[in-house]
Length: 107
Image (spheres, rainbow, N blue to C red):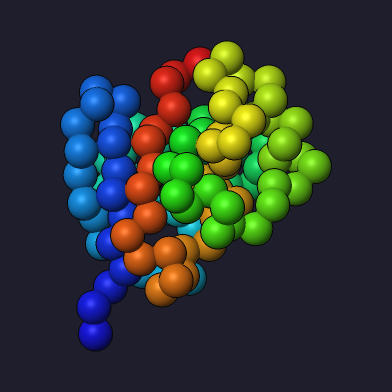
């Protein structure tokens, strides 16, 4: 059974393709694969250290940001209105196979 794949550009600008388990959050997957995601709050939507940019082609396929997530990403220096997401708020599903994300710069 093929696992969904994520295309990731890390902070150094290097591209990686990593396998993901459906049901995990994007943050857990990126953190566990050492993709520059700190996730200091552990996925509680309270720190923005798992900030990523979702590729334009995928951004519209994700559920909208919650008010808490919106507030946190807006406060980051690298905020992109259409692309900024907290990876802890995105559940990986088979439908997201091939999603492209770029890890946001460190704040």
